[in-house]
Image (cartoon, rainbow, N blue to C red; front, side, top):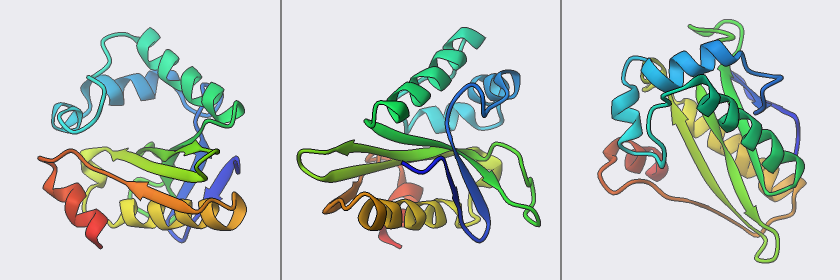
Length: 154
């Protein structure tokens, strides 16, 4: 997996405790504006401790190194509102035997509506097909998440 992926407006860096400020990540994953709304549509609850956040970051790095999943911290690039801040996280899990990847992402509420999810997805699809020679890239969403459904349709 590539350590870094850049698009016109985003920089994706491999997720891990050495790439992400623990205090900032904990604040985002525990009490950021809209985190309860985000947590309704993902597989985790807002973090209750910094240890939980550290484990999230460590697990992302371990899965990356083991070739199971490419998880990235998403940051807007220079010239974008919030440049350099954590906008969210995204990546894909890989089933090497089936040669498939399943995309996933979540963005902080203040970064919604900017087209970042689609830009991130296009970059990851390119990596999956061109660099990793996978045959299928899939994506799903929580049935009640209309915004994700519309983003996937685009």
